[in-house]
Amino acid sequence: MRHALLASIISLAVFAVACGGSNTSNTTLKDAQNVEKPTGDRAGAEVKFNEEGSSVEWTGRKVTGKHNGGFKKFSGNLMLDKAGKEVSYAMVEIEVGSLWADSKTEGNAKLEGHLKADDFFNAEKFPKAKFETTKIEKKGDKHEVTGNLTMRDVTKSITFPASISVGEKEVTVKAEFNIDRMGYGIKFEGMKDNLIEDKVDIRLDIKAKR
View 1 (cartoon, one colour):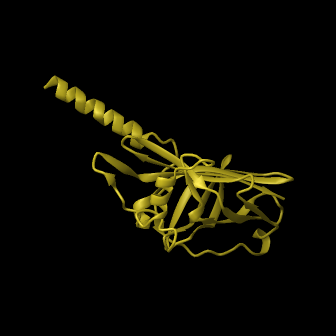
View 2 (cartoon, one colour):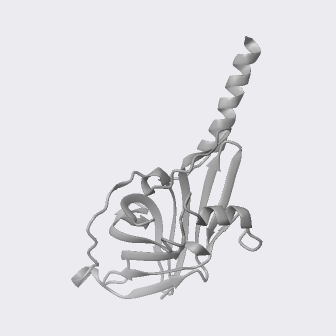
View 3 (cartoon, rainbow, N blue to C red):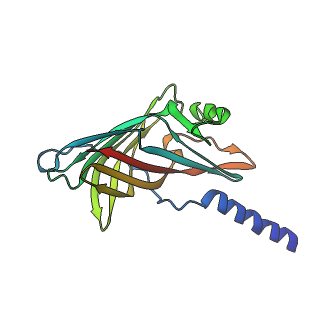
């Protein structure tokens, strides 16, 4: 009996580490909001960025471990306010078929093929994913970003903390948060003895030259 109880405790601990070992901020999916690109005093210069010097990455977890990955092709822009001191709007569009898994250089062909299939992204039918802000608020030394994330033709509003820095020559945005893939119709559970966690970690590291 004691051995069975000990085994159960160890199993729960392993599950907690494998599936809940993320330090990213939790997000809640809400109904999409209207996007109004800033105008007037809130509209200033726009700076563009792409995969050169920036990264959009993810981590998916399951009972026995995790997979890291990202996207090789994406582009977007950041709009500054009139004073050029704050970011008032951001947009990024991702080519889903450019995803990589486990290694950006070598890849994992089998896993990448599965992720591009209908169990996950269905990249052939839904080739683009997009995030567009609806609000960016300064919160102490960080910012709170709210926007619409669209995947698989489903759009949901999410809010997450970000570190935004506006320099004379470069604007940077860094954020780590998670999303619930179930809200986007990505419901593949994995093997019964190796279930996949619903939450997926997202990491943004954006650098845009002014």
